[in-house]
Length: 407
Image (cartoon, rainbow, N blue to C red; front, side, top):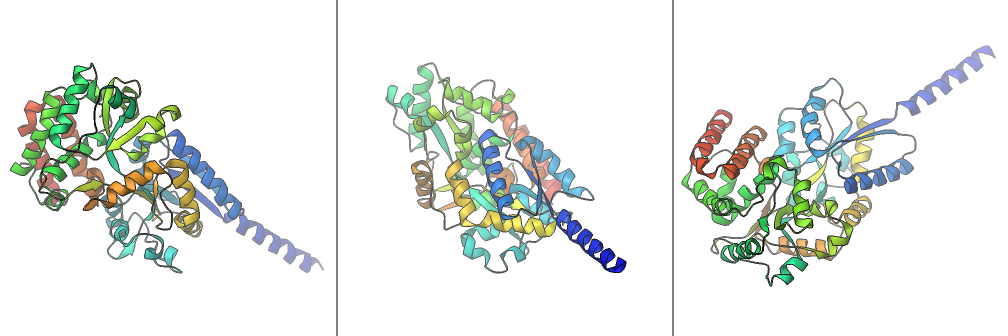
């Protein structure tokens, strides 16, 4: 009898231990209020579906997350899943063996049964899937409809029309363009778009792949268009001291008229202003070129040093579903990566229509090129915006870094 009691106690301990061992540590970059709210909402749904898994959710600001991620991935033990970016940013860690292939998350159904086939290259490395896409979004030039209406401005489609709008805004006491370059990445959108509009994406991909010198005359030509905006003082003057959210405030209070930004701008826009917020495609410069747009993809990956990999795979499968991505899409106005989820509202449908009418898309400069080179490049772009006369020296410095990394 004592032996039987002993065995029952042991069995109970084993069962209790097995339940206690089910844990999931999630590190997320959803630090802004709306993404944070939605992440907690989705987590509650996951816990309702998997009540035996103890979940630890850690949410960080975007900039802190970028710094901390390398530390987590290089530690003896890391979080079980982390939010991140598709494309080169993901492949950089896959190449270094710091994240885990997740092909078996899609063992029952293929990746293509969840997501557009075009997404697979941005989520893979050497034939393996490493990334679960959650959402994607477009970049465009945002403005307030009421301001444009008051000044009799029609959204421009060409470079000449765009410059005319800048002049009208400036003549009416507004800075035509707001931007916050305290964190460098906002400058990269301008570099991307000027190259896509002046040189075309096919050529520009050589720049992102490290095959084209930064002193190439074509790159300099693209920068000269940017220089027109800088030299005419169309950008707000103190952009290097502002985050992108602080720069958004200039648009909100009508100190500035336009903002080149991703769809997530709506997350930080006052609710009363959201119906007044609209966007237009970055203006066409060379009408002979095909039209390309920026569409970054956000999602999740599993660190190699994750402790609770089975729980992590449950989270990744959960996030991939049309049900969950539909909720995220509706709450944040993003375009869901899952191809069975329609655009959640008219604003998102307009963005989707703009993308579908384009000839192709790219991710984003600091997601599509080597991260070390991107950092050097973006430092140079911000420096150029402050000292445009230093363009030649700035491009030479970036070129030295390209040679070091790629050659």
